[in-house]
Amino acid sequence: MSNLASSHHHVLLFILFSFFISISYSDPRIQEASLNCSATMYPPTLTSTLITTFTSVMEGVLEQVTEQNWGTFHQGDNPPIYALANCMQDLSSTECLLCFAESRTKLPRCIPSISGRVYLDGCFLRYDNYSFFGEAVDKKHDKVVCGKPFESIAKQDFSKLEFTQSVDELINNVTRVAIENHGFGVSHIKSGLATVYSMAQCWKPLSSHKCRECLDAAAQEIRNCTSSIEGRSLNAGCYLRYSTTKFYSTDADKLSDAGFSNIGVAIAIALAALAFSLLCLFGACLGYKRLEILRKERNNLGRLSSAVSKSNLNFKYETLEKATEFFDPSRKLGQGGAGSVFR
Image (cartoon, rainbow, N blue to C red):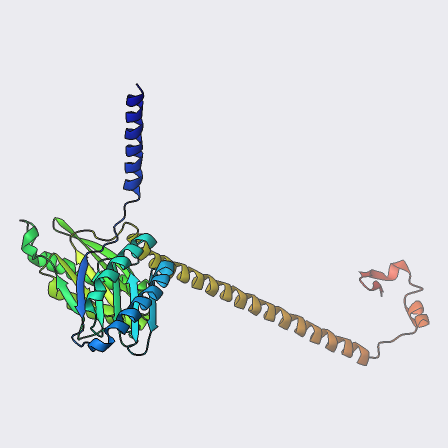
């Protein structure tokens, strides 16, 4: 009986363990898209120093990646090493660290080259002997990687021309979204029996101008892949990909839409500020007109008072008594704010 209870206990633990494993599953997208090493090498005498400096720089980058999912670091003089790591924006912190760890094991294959870069589907890591952090394009090393040919998914009502046109439209959409959303965007489009997905991202150190420059170049280059079901444009400052398989996280759409929400909020604030300014201006105009009316009334009153003073209409009390028969009520015309009026 105790063995049976123990068996049930183990099964329950296994089910619970499996449940938690399933809900914590993540995809850091560590598939290698490209590893590019410079053909120029450091001399063998610097190899030991290069490895030591490289290791130290990677530790410096790791600290920043842990905090913000991207980082830059540089160290050394002979040779100097500059490094940049950047995870895709839809990755969680844990997924980013897993992807960075994988890229960190692949990039040393470039040593003793003076530079190297590795693109994984979830992150990017590069080192070089100069500060390249704001670099958008590198015609020497930027490349495009195309996937399987279109024919691998061809269906009767799914024409190659339709697919090419859909991908072209999708590329325009996703680059526009990324430019408007601080360097990150995802999009998808229905084409025949398939849906095509796309993601664009600029590396964090890039300015908005450089980001646009990079994505424009990447969009132009990736169009060479539109006869394939998948394509990647791997540039110095950005990453652009499309595929018939949804490869980004479910949260990516929210991140992509956040840019439009921010734009909407900004527009709403601007309109509210404009409305408030117009109300203030309208109120100021009314106040000014009111002051003008009061000023004119004061001027008129002043002129009237002056006229009365100059008219010499000043009478002695005895004269007024005689004229009104000692203020007889029958001579009273009415009552004013300043007293009774007699004739």
